[in-house]
Image 1: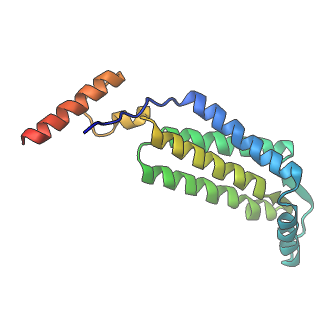
Image 2: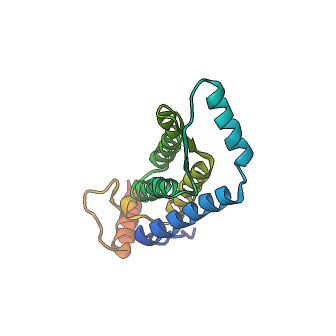
Length: 170
């Protein structure tokens, strides 16, 4: 039975690439006005509820770009640095909920936050980081469950082979 070894994953290059791609996606979608109708519907809902919206923030404005970049870079960095699929899911879901909570938090001060471009960016960042981390052997994955921490992929493969042969002998 042939086993395939996952390639060794990096953190820095995927972090930068995925964050900028997701940020570009959110900015482009907002500039094209894809979510314009939904955004206006949300604004009308808030104003009908008695909230006076004095200003708008969000993508593609500079504040929206900075906030979205912080969310994307933070989420991708956290996912690539965390072992385990369940923990990565929890991180992504938490990032999604936190980005959604900007709407009511800023609404209290009369600032309407346009959430949909940022939500798309966060979902894309989450998706791309989880797919990459699932298809690569991340540095954090090599450290889980081992008292001796291998420093190279070859050492890690040898250690895993020893564990499998000892399991077969038992």
